[in-house]
Image: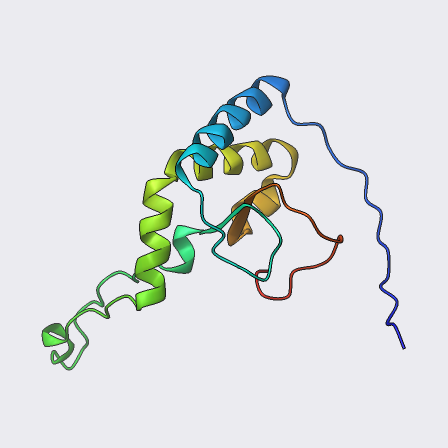
Length: 134
């Protein structure tokens, strides 16, 4: 049997046309550089996930505890995945910043909390909620 998906319709909000032009310029530049589909299960000629810095930034070095013995502990290191995410974000920081700025003009609350941005070229698929990147 085929499982039926619930359809959710939401009215969108218009993004400033000037910002859309800037986004298009950045997206075209990205597509010239990035020719890899980093998620082969997704049907797209190019696909990348840019993660929010808050997803992988190291916490500030802990303050010395009242016992005085925590000051010798080394700060935690980033995982391999976090290093890769940080490198991707650094490479495409201007695209992240512009997308985040665009989001903040239509939904400031969401713009402060979203954790990842999927950027695709020639994506083909059914509308769905991504269970892997939410």
